[in-house]
Length: 180
Image (tube, rainbow, N blue to C red):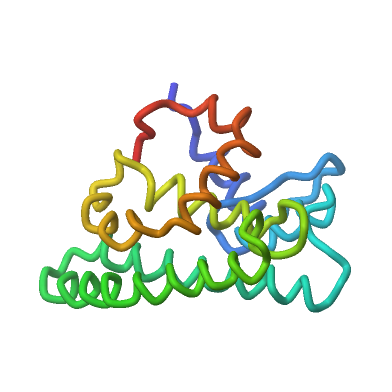
């Protein structure tokens, strides 16, 4: 039998408010949708998102910057039209140095350990997604293209190494090299 029958699929579709994943089912049976909203929910629930408005802005704007990067990257990565793909690649590569510099500037302004505040936040989790899933992932088919923009970034390296230590238990459960 298939893993998901069409009846099961219909049940899941009804639970997916916008008809797509991700979806988080809470212990009380609620179905929460939208990636970044789920991240903020989990951050508030488990203490990784602050009540302070300015710190929350730094976190939210960092997450928005992560979204900008991810959208540009995936536009390039999944475009089938070769002409459009070339334009998306050019835009991604053109914006990558500015994006990395802005992230490093924020890190430096905050002391380098975390992107905002004095403890790990959901913004660091979002950056870890980009860092460990895309930029620093040797299994990423575009790793070699992005490496020249990040390889000499000492602030970024120090930050990534610190996150690796903070997230070591979780990262150790992932396959190496990580699948893409």
